[in-house]
Amino acid sequence: DQQVKQNSPSLSVQEGRISILNCDYTNSMFDYFLWYKKYPAEGPTFLISISSIKDKNEDGRFTVFLNKSAKHLSLHIVPSQPGDSAVYFCAASVQGAQKLVFGQGTRLTINP
Amino acid sequence: DAGITQSPRHKVTETGTPVTLRCHQTENHRYMYWYRQDPGHGLRLIHYSYGVKDTDKGEVSDGYSVSRSKTEDFLLTLESATSSQTSVYFCAITLKGGFGNTIYFGEGSWLTVV
Image (cartoon, rainbow over all chains, first blue to last red; front, side, top):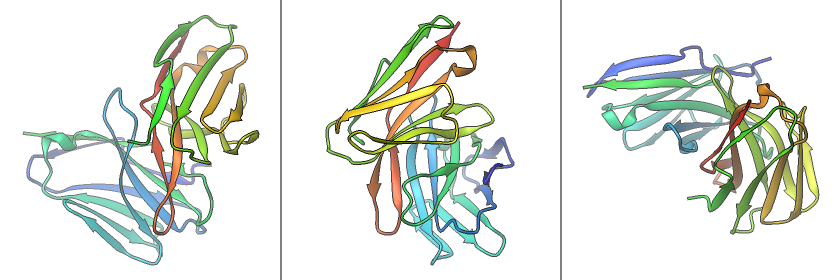
């Protein structure tokens, strides 16, 4: 049972445009959500997070949106840059829990 | 930088042999994790530890065991490696943020079972 799903295995975006990565979850107990970025041959790195008391969190070019009623979150990258090409994982947890549940990942390619 | 060191970083082993991966941290983190990453599956939790000698299973723990005899080291052992355990293994620690817990990963250990 996949509790966190990223239904798009890959996404290709032109440099300078907006990249939108999507993530859906099924467990209504999740109340903390994170995005990670992973380059080849490196460990995943934390990018941005959001708690369920918010519907938006922004950090520079990265914004995460949370729609609790739809059990959906998205990551917006504006403007997209070549260095953003990577695999992006969304993750979710329950407050106080020490474990994260990850989605399958989306490979983002930024084209010049 | 999460202050995590994984070893070995790359290993090729034969089916049926035991393999131990080591995760070493220097910042006295209480929680430590082992994840594996496979195409189409994302990152899946194998085992985690919440203190010395305190460990628990994750979602894909079959075929794996762990030990934590001191705070700084968390060992993952494949008792008898199989080809299905060919994967990238990531150790991780938890840092508590303003609301939730954020996991930080090491650089990974690439394991090939032939």
